[in-house]
Length: 255
Ligand code: MN
Image (cartoon, rainbow, N blue to C red; front, side, top):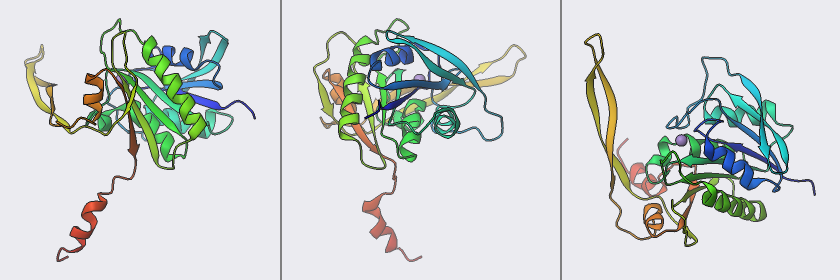
């Protein structure tokens, strides 16, 4: 068997600490290639570039086993996966791992996340994919623990595979001690948002999005609860957004 081809992406940009930790953590697991946005694309969601050219610049990542190939792309996380699979890689990868994101991607944030969208784009293309986020926004956050779990989970996915249309969303608690893995579901939560008005130097009003994250979920098996208890949260996500439990009801409407 040839070594698996593993594509690494993120949304924090190719120079972010998290993606370098991830590449080092996966060293030796297969042939690794990094394709990531040249600058930060956090909250880019699943956006793609259609009205501008997309360029890819060659980069090198230094891993313990030696240098590996990398590309910085002038686009979004989803662009990176598409371009990688279509042009930059010699063949479709066997696994895509996205991250390690600075900050959690739990609950409704999954929808805004560029980290998750890199993994979901891979999933659309039929490639097993994992998104990994560290639940800390600190500049000096320690990514080593999340690197360890990312490798462990990547190994499990390479062993077991994933069904078509399903990807894994992983969130690692911050702090030195992690209790283990819990398989969870997406919590029900939302942002109570406010566009704060400010005035620019020319006297014109502009707005800055601020908000408070509100957890509406008091069940124990969701992603936020697992992280609170000090467990790595692994949530299987499905790309088919159809609300199957509402299809019959809707068919009953007088159309
Ligand atoms: Mn990010």
